[in-house]
Image (cartoon, rainbow, N blue to C red):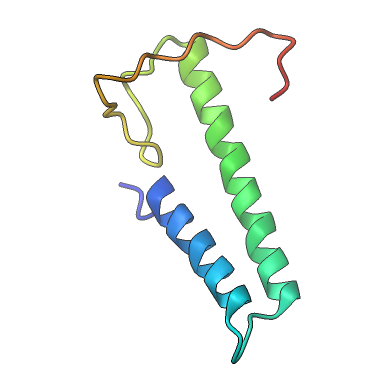
Length: 86
């Protein structure tokens, strides 16, 4: 079982923003940039997982990082077009 989930990543990123805004002792910009770069790598990895689930039509399987439960009021997203790079 994965220790960290997407919610944990969000928490860390918001903590970084708060630390940058701290007037008494703001976080070093180089450290904040390193956190941002690692977070982006994790996000890109999650995007690959989601795309793989779409290709395998296995959205219900989920991953340890991204929860499989969804709110019933939210529709499933359609598969992306191959030309869509977003």
